Length: 165
Image (cartoon, rainbow, N blue to C red; front, side, top):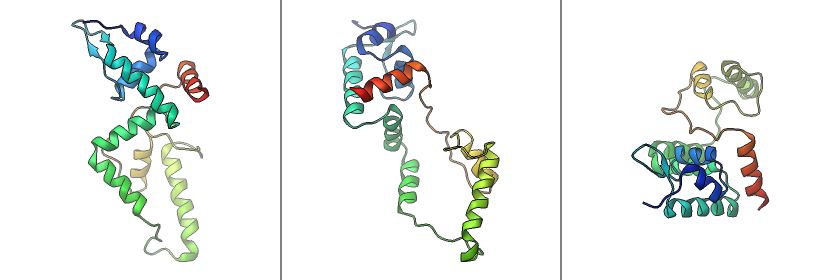
């Protein structure tokens, strides 16, 4: 079988080996494996990596966006929960007077942030969000969120290169 190792594929495609592993973990491009367990990138995988980069650039997407889209296609419960959230309208909780609603919501947010262990981050870390929701009487999702790409200079360089192209 004619195929490239992960390092050869990285040199050929411009994706770092670390990003190729992330793309594989996300389920976007999964190379074959040798009998010894090494990743083998053939022509089909190289084409998918090329067209993946083109898709990301053309539509200004991140790998995590595509990984999430893949989850939406595979997980009916997640898709339904998101559809329900978009279709829902805010409503004042029973037993909360209209004049008290704003302070009630502020208190709820403060409890969520305290349970997540942060003061007021722009976005609470996804790992702690289910615990925070459960701490204030909500229900946590059945599965943890998809792992995000490692934040390193290689990742940043690829994202920067893709957005500048």
